[in-house]
Length: 289
Image (cartoon, rainbow, N blue to C red; front, side, top):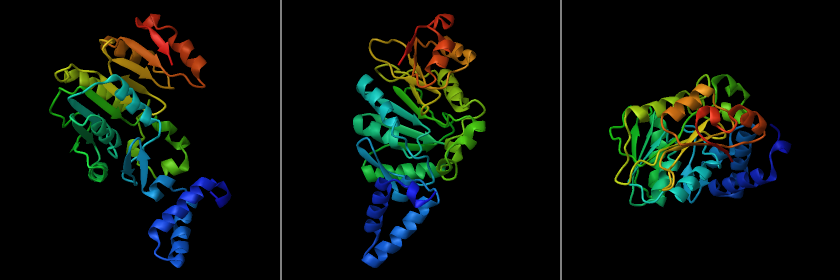
């Protein structure tokens, strides 16, 4: 990367960061040079700035965790617009803790718990809880391995979803700086998502006093998302992202009692629609978003 490739708005943000750190004009130039060098080396701007605004909270970020993506705010919107007063919320694969913390801010009376396989990630998540003065319980766990309860009204999971063989195609600033464990979703990108669905079924999640709303599984622009229930939808829904699921996966989802499948179409919409059709072969209606 050369300086001509760095957008002006990023250079302006680097200058602001240098001003925050510097105590004099001499120090400012020194700090700015160091920050600019880091960006020229490909380090993500968010790591250099050390924090990002997310929805209505501030989240510190560093190389212990994946950088929260802006599109994840859409997940928060889905939950906020569909769920009223959940008693118990579980965020699986919490990373920086941004989803759990935002849900705690939205649902102040709810009990919010968050788990992650990475102890380092949870250290950062706890820091973010203190910064935002929000109370969330954090536990080290490989998916639901150390989760003792099964009465969650909402299960949210932002899990790795990128197929292993395609990791090499990611931008250098992603593959060289962000933790691979938070990106690698196994051979088909669905290894953790599949396992979480399986564990939810095996643990017979029942929900709190108002019933189980269903898992909300977020997988960036690809993979599977189980959306929360509304009063008019008696069973969980699934939103399938840009990557079409193989037929056996969809049938397994249907067998688990999913009532409707929502498919987000992008530039591959014709491929996805040709594969899934109207859902007749799966026995469920399919709606394209």
